[in-house]
Image (cartoon, rainbow, N blue to C red; front, side, top):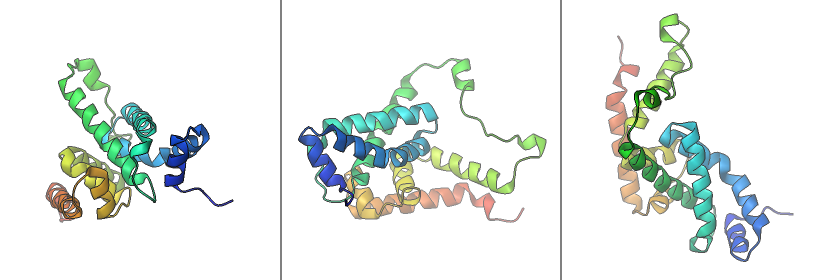
Length: 185
């Protein structure tokens, strides 16, 4: 039996077929989580964003207007959930203990066990995380998720030229922040 398209699964979901939505969730959970994990950094927050994304997708399944993959639509929902979470986190008072519980690099550079690749990867992740959301989200969609500019535009509700420009500007910001990775010491 041929695999059902995302559009078919969402149509069947609207008709009350819970198994169709379960299939859609199983098909795309890993990708939505990977996007959220990069966008918000904390694994627990990324799980929350992923769950909220699929709850909202279920609630608004009738609004899916595409005929192909639901990934741009789902990542657009996830991007909105990430923005909401980041706004909430900025307003939430935090104790020193809460701040210290953040995720730390797995290797200890002072122990001499960090590889140049691991250090560069960590620098890149930090630089991407420091980008404003309007640039961070499109660059993650483009280079981590492999979406086209048209799909990014659809997910963010902007024109394809605007999506392309945001990715271009994000790359320029990253080049400036990560210049040390390519220049000799």
